[in-house]
Length: 160
Length: 287
Image (tube, rainbow over all chains, first blue to last red; front, side, top):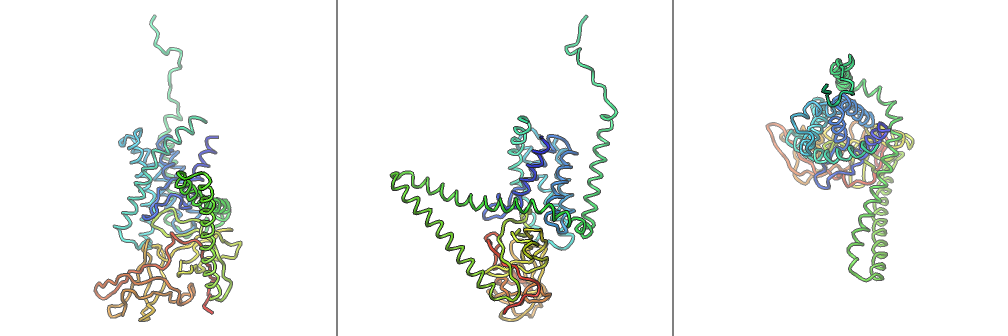
């Protein structure tokens, strides 16, 4: 039951991420909901669970867009899912600020991987300053969302 | 005899599975990492495998996006209604009801009028081209914010093909990157992955338009080329993707470095405000 709920949650979050629901009006940046969820799975259940969810979510996103970034999205999702579990001890993950920091790290890993891959292929013509600024804003927004998702998951999984 | 507090609890004896848990976990992560790294290293081969799977996955995803789009539009209308309700709360009940009805009617009428205007412009534009032109509604976008791809609600079922040109009433939008059964992904001209030939309408100088995420740049112009701020940049029609002469944007700034000139272009189409687009078949041209 809890597995089905998790799949549904990830599916809805991927839908939100692609449908531009949470996009800021002028900046154009947005939090990556699925990264926030994957980071929470990683903090609660460990690196393998988080990594597997991140891998699957990144793969689903890559398959949907079916462009050259599919591998980068998968690898980015995997890193965003397993790295927070390894560094959570140093970032006070039980505190909301620690969860936010880990969410931001997850987003940095995912978007950084996609951006880095596009840069290596010569497909990313945005300068490093603009790219890093957008990356930072997206990471901050994702970080802000992570503690809320953490509370939501706690409630959801305690009731079921 | 003094017993420990939890003497009835079986002492924890580490099992073999527990002992190798860390190794097991690291092995799986290594396997997933290798798979993902392989996919990253060989993107073209991966896409070949991914495309059939995409067709199945995108059926559900496309339906979800359409629903999300409907919810988003309904939410906007709902927000407008809630705001006007709050504003009118101070007035008398009858007056408020009348005002509300009128306001909703006018909002709906204005929305219809705007939509009719947009569609009329789109229809006018559709008549300008040869070939079978398709119209589509924008339902989503790329989750990574510095990439500018759009998701539209027409796909292979409606006859959309990869690499078709996509235009709006205000100018060129981009090209179809991938096609699902009932939706497609469109690469915006200002996406960092996009490159097309373009020319200056006044001086006829041709360059390569490169996307920068939220704007674009005309590159590879020689130092002597005549390009000025305010010039219109149009599609060059090379490579049979876009017909020649579709507006891309205006020159915002001209920068000289050594023997080359680059011009910043303010795009005529800004995808965040885009609601409907036209899809031109390959080789389409102006009548």
